[in-house]
Image 1 (tube, rainbow, N blue to C red):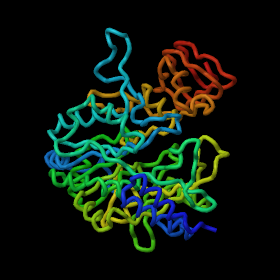
Image 2: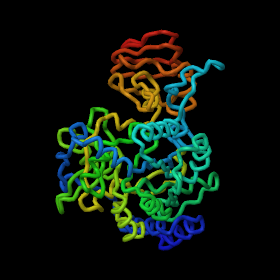
Image 3: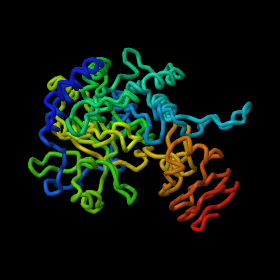
Image 4: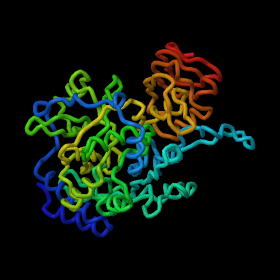
Length: 475
């Protein structure tokens, strides 16, 4: 039976930790839903697919209208992730990704300058500013564990700040709850693990607490594009800005057409009860409905987590709700220590920022090219991004030179960034001619390795020699 003091304990813990009142009230709302047995599941029988949306490639937006809209746009990057799934203990955005496009080889050291996600994001914004004349503010929503390192890294770029606007604001945190009684967990081995982020739906109470939306409006901005910092495809885009401004919509989501590799992620669907567009995350999909949700002939699009907001509409909603938007609950069952399956079972209360599509009357969506969705969630993704499948241009855009192959590295040796880095110390292999790469065993790759076709490595492991070609039968 649920401990009746669980919510009171959680609220006290959050208050003492300085969590924003809007976040505490949001947590309280979700806690009551959790007590009532709410799971947040959206059943297939209750929805219809969303299929009829505009395509960015077919838009007819004048250069003047596009440039004018971008001039009133701000960029916001969600930067709270630590990359714990890859064994990191700092902001994932500080992970080296690519060689600088213009520096090439450093004549003094002979070493290439490696750029992080954050470096490339800054480069994209700088390039867009130079090309369009837009002020284009760049803001980061940091967590209490990513803020210090990220701001230190940004000190390299004093020009990135826009007068009168902050560079960042803090997302909130909430206590993990013991599964059996929904009281806040205590974990003396590492008290930090007693806390979790509330999911990216925390964007709204965090924006309310920070006053960022009002500050942007007062500075003359009308639109905001929000995306994850580990998605380097979400570059400043004047065409989409122009379309969004002309649409008059309060909110829009970018969707991509599914490929066989897209087996996870949220999707937008149409609720039969009222015809409203709503978001269904993987965690909100009933096991009996998974096959239908993954069927690209029925649900052709997936959500990129790139969002556009009309700041006036967002400010009005934040004011009306005091930052407590009525988003669906996502119940996430974990262990208090994600690396220890024997540690106590906990519930993490989460929500998705994209679920706000149901909150804003007239919300819409747009189909975008796959180039606007290049996330790095695993070392498999990182290897592709570091390879010659992509070129990093002088304006810091990643341009695909070939179809991205499906990479499946042995988790025992490559899942964590230290093990991955050690085994690819000589650089990523060429993947332009690869359909897929499957690695089982402990293999270290030499320099100049090429991968072709449906390639695989198996056995206990070893070293792939410099200049070798890896194919279906190894090398």
